[in-house]
Amino acid sequence: MSSTRKKSRARALAFIGVGALAAATLVSTGAVAAGIVTNPHRIEGDQTSAVKQAIVSGPAKNVILLIGDGMGDSEITVARNYQYGAAGELPGIDALPLTGSYTTYSIYKDGPQRGLPDYVPDSAATGSAWATGSKTYDNAISVDIDGQPLPTILEIAKANGMATGDVSTAEIQDATPAVQVAHVDARSCYGPDSATCGDDALAAGGLGSISEQLLNTRPDVVLGGGLASFQQTAKAGQWNGKTLLDQAADRGYQVVTDAAGLASVSAANQSKPVLGLFTGGNFPTRYAATTATVGGADTPTTCTENPDRLPKELSLASLTSKAIDLLSAKQKGDKGFFLQVEGASIDKRDHSADACGQIGETIDLDEAVQVALAYAKQKGDTLVLVTADHAHTSQIVDSTPPTSLSTALTTVDGSVMKISYGTAAAGGSQQHTGSQVRIAGFGPGAANIVGLTDQTDTFGTITGTLGLNLETAALSKGAKLKPGVSGSGDVVTITGTGFSGDRQVSVAFGSQTQVVDVVDGSISASFTAPDAKLVKVVTVTAKGQQSAVTAKTVYAVHK
Image 1 (cartoon, rainbow, N blue to C red):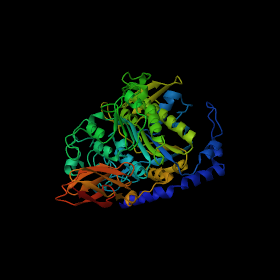
Image 2 (image 1 turned 30 degrees about the horizontal axis):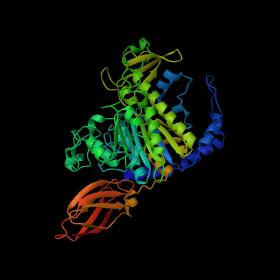
Image 3 (image 1 turned 135 degrees about the vertical axis):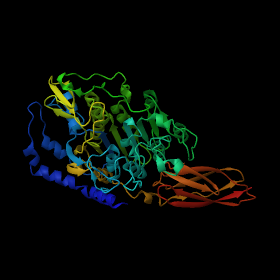
Image 4 (image 1 turned 180 degrees about the horizontal axis):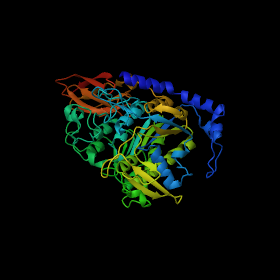
């Protein structure tokens, strides 16, 4: 474990409980009550009481983490003003009672600044920060500064017996969803055809592309875009020559590509995980695009529905609801679930200086937050966190900027809001910014996000509140294989248990080998027994690919 990772993880774990203590002290001294300023346009409840009631210590059974990609405070305010008015509230994002801010910087990988802060990060480094508890460099997907894989929350939760899910309106290989399921040096290593995979490619002896690693990580529920990468053909490994879709079917995935297919899915588990891929690339946005121009804020407009938007059954709120239903269905052990949900195109439309596009995507995320919050309030055992990976460039301004791109929108108040994009010229990509961003929470452990934290602390908040064993290799130490007897030429099925710390296991039956998926800690591999005239006893060896734990047994072969 790198020193950077040790420090950030120690900080994250030490932080658990501190936020709750600080928040409790704040309430008990009356500081919260003293600081409340009543908005004359809004009917206020007893906010002091609401904050007190929201301070609930862990553990939590479930965690739902919702990410608005590029959703800085400015993007939240723009969407709120347009959709609900200056004195309004986003009914999901603004309803979480405990809020804080976190820093989002990444680190430089090379050169004289290696290891020093890179103040304006990308989605790969920021997603890796909360997923692994470690700072890394831009472009990296859950690897450290030296390119070594780091365990993610989803992988750790799965090893601890929890159900897991990953939902996005982007290609499921995009940076934010990818950080929970893959480890690559270059975020663009989507599929076997990606030229940027380098030594991460299976053909080069690496772990494979993001899509291939996703199949290995085997979350119970994956919903998003990115079908095109799964139509590519593996170039090495056990499924060489097969498309990734064929591989998924061979490995027991329920592959669905439309709303009807998703509606037909009634259960998801490790035996039959769900892979829902509803577009070749990213999802279409909720609102049709607007184009910011120099002088564009002189002429107010309003947002209109995008005619290409996916059906309501595939909205982010609907996908979130379906994922929760599938993950919360009582399964073997019923150890709860971890679910990450991303509203991806707040960032993508901000890059394009598309005010209506980013507003619609923020509203979509807010509706997904409402779904998660309703579930958490009903159950009482679920931590909901809502945050962003990084801030972005849109700004609410007072007058039409003379040189930068801008748009004016008539809001629900009937007033005009002017939005400026000043970090790139027309046709260019607007830049991320290095500002801290909001993190808000509800449920057990949510007080840990109050105040100023770092993105890496979110890893500790989630894993600590869930009480996860972070040393996943130890979860396979009790692995064992069942001995057996077979006849010459018979099909022999080797079974093993106790491999919870692994996702795949390499099984050798004499000179025959194959790699098999771990399903709820168990494995099963089939081989053909040798001729008993030549071999009387076969040694069977199984080695966990993630834990390196080895189990052995013997098979007797008779005529």
